[in-house]
Image (tube, rainbow, N blue to C red; front, side, top):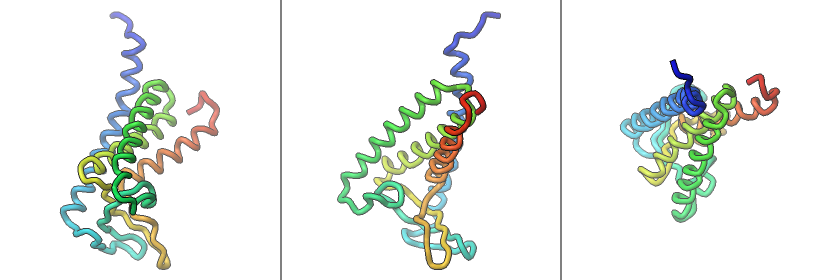
Length: 166
């Protein structure tokens, strides 16, 4: 049996991370479609004493940064997301054997793609997860935002580990 090329080996280690990212994108998009079908904009449904489902549209970036800008932010943020997708995909390809690094990157890739789909399809991001306590509300977010946040934490943890361990 002929030996596989380095590119073929890299693809074999790269594909599972892309598959994970696509599964998360699918979960993100299906959850957004379900909320869009069941809620009116601004509608909120309490599920627990600290958690609501709510339909809000975010034209800005994280924590609604730039949300009140007159519209120029949508193509800018979409362009940044496209650049992030390219860079993260390249990083996944370059480091196929680093499990923890690739897990973080795959989560960030999924989140970037999920929110990019929203920006291109709707001109804003669909958010619906609303945590609150004692009258304080965390800004509403979605599955893609969660993936980005968890992925970033994983990358921070991975950066403190010796190079060959993760």
